Length: 324
Image (tube, rainbow, N blue to C red; front, side, top):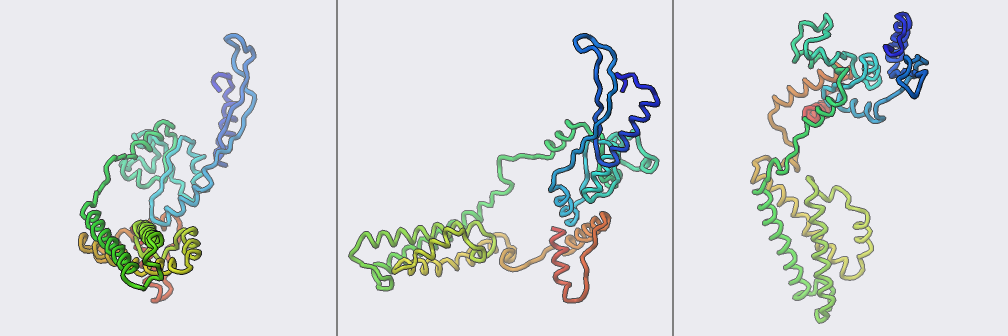
């Protein structure tokens, strides 16, 4: 507007339109033109204004709602005007306690927050506006702490699990080989070397596949359905001795879980975290759950209902999940 040499009354009108757009969550673009294009040029001529709708991502409201339900204190940091930010906050289900970023440095503070220290201001605010885009990128970069090394190697658990499960599976293959060669449990031709080799290869392949399913599951792996091709292969590969080999592998597959839970219990001292429900540090979880409920209340979300005594376990479990 300074380049266009607008009069004071025109500037006030433009600012009023900008504020009107901002209250609706719209940005403002000023359109101007220059009388002489190929030279230094005369003053710019004000033509008009355009509104620009720049909404958040479609999944932002759902993400923020879920975060608030879990007790996360969500704050918005943006380079928009304060009026635009407040309107966006309303659309996302957030409160509208938005302040200029300069208030963190003690500048442009409202009378209501003038006496607040920076820590209290950050806790009270739902967002800060007028932040440079480069600053936003710096914040996201500073929060990233890449590490080429794992936080915890857990070598004892890895070696113990590998030795125990590897020894068990090797014994399982040895017993299978003995059974197909020395007994009549499997309907195989003992003189047919190719049939014996194919049976042993099939059993080892099944063990390898089931071990993948087992190691990728933190609970009883057979509760989760394997991939559809494996299920189809199991159904098709049933005729004659192949189905018996599958049955043998499945029977010996169940003890793997007990071994895994036992190893984890012996090494960590934690009682069956993935087998049975366990709790620790009840006081800490209760405090965290109370804080989470306070955050939900602050953002206008209803706390879980406790209608009768039969729902107490379910509600406590919900509070524990929120705290975690």
